[in-house]
Length: 398
Ligand SMILES: Cc1cc2nc3c(=O)[nH]c(=O)nc-3n(C[C@H](O)[C@H](O)[C@H](O)COP(=O)(O)O)c2cc1C
Image (cartoon, rainbow, N blue to C red; front, top):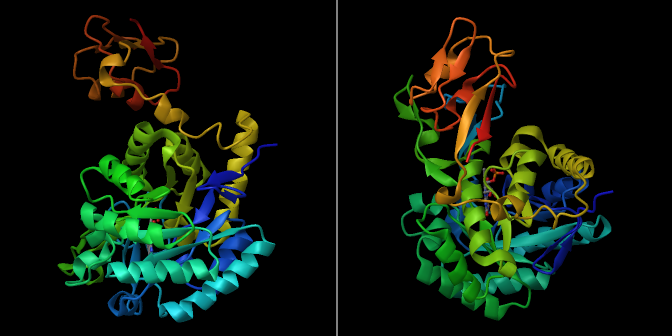
């Protein structure tokens, strides 16, 4: 039987699937539902001393969008987008801490970990919130340097406005790391040029982990009305964004190996994605949008899916999977040379592969298509377009 336990910043989680800080963790009631569903942990909605960020949540709006970026209206495709405007925890910190404490008690009985999340607009505020939430009993604190919405709120210096200012972000990290005993993890915005450098700086400043990454800002016009959906720019993400997140996890893993813990978020939909996040280098994986579509039970379903996958593949521990894909990544210059090979028995001569060939390699014969060896550089376009499994293979020739 696979053991799904993980050590994340020296805190044990029974499994790596965590409900990320968002509406599914808005209060104790919601967090308990994540725990009941079987999540290894929950990250509470970001507690803040910013009245503007609390007030924004009272006017939250979001839409699930289909592949045309139109409102789904019932049928949410696998590659949906979640386009939304929302703020941070609704209650003032002193009140929200009661939800944290209540959830912590519940979590002990259910073997789950409750992680705090904080955001302020002043360094002293970050420190105060850090101490308050530590005193409430959380074993880990996430600092939210990734929330996209403050970018749209003049004068509100938190979230992404911090994550885009590396010096200020490190100052906050250092101040909070020195003020609290528990490890801190920094949730960053993807809207910067270099998360490798930033992760290193955050580590030096005292972060035990980075959370890669919060969501992007986007803009979606409604062509019927000529107006933007939900009144303007909004946070945007969804399962399709996964490769962009995994690219950063891959690079931070490659740069720092196990010297920094990685929480992955932004694009994990189901257990398959969780596996991809772990194989890229994540220690834990945070889920949000998929839970907002399918409900809390989705979390448990993915825990069971992950366990089944590990049992079938013979992975005994999460550690055995972590980073293996990142560690196998090759530089361009090291890639082997390849060629397409057509199996004439299976090829139905549909000619679709010709659409994907720009090297004049695929040739349509009377009976079947074939690959002209001298022209083929093995790009794989034909292989991806071929509708018959096994009719085209890509083989190493050098
Ligand atoms: C409606 C909504 C509210 C969110 N609120 C917060 C928040 O309070 N704090 C935070 O750190 N991230 C917040 N996030 C970001 C999520 O925690 C998560 O990192 C992000 O949605 C990417 O994960 P996903 O692809 O599983 O949705 C929010 C996201 C959404 C959609």
